[in-house]
Length: 256
Image (cartoon, rainbow, N blue to C red; front, top):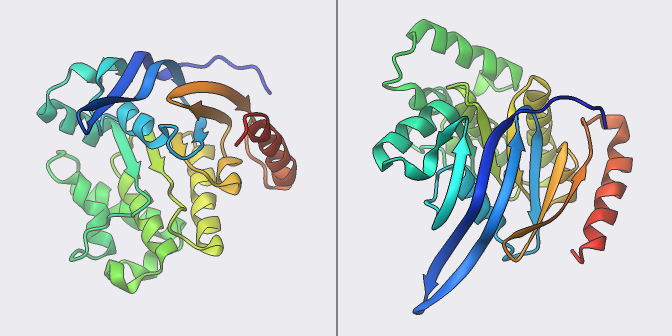
């Protein structure tokens, strides 16, 4: 792996997340100290129930932590009020969900436009950005269609555009190909690789080997703790098989 100076975009300090289930405390994330680096494509993996999505939601401020700190772009988001956190998320964070979550009564263009409301940004600049994004991801001729008129892969590409429209410092993705067939998933992964190549910081949870090998850094979560990491370096299509083999062996060693 090439040596380069890395800046932390997210840092956690003794991060814990617990839920109360049937009167008993269930500790999901346990004393996690972690750095996520700017410009990386970080992938979080682990067995079912290991806490992957809980960690992702805690890092992104989508879920309130129980104890500890999450420092995102220099700000302690664990101390923010809900109102301030909502504004911070709009400005700093993009999120792509497995369920896609487009607004059904808005067309493609309007869905991407929606996060820009009340941001004070120039309307003409936003309109041009949306047109450019749609053209880049081969969706320009779909811009007046509604979500129900699109394939799953097309809907997820729209969701990625929507997550990127406010130029987030970091893009989070929770199983973004989980609801897609292999062909649709491939197109969506190509979008993630492309935007990462442009410098976008990405943190993605996935259980899929082909999706995970797009990452530069793999974190393996076991029982709410980081139980190993693998540095894969920058993704190149011609090295995909080798990357998959390295990742497979890494996961095998951890009983995945």
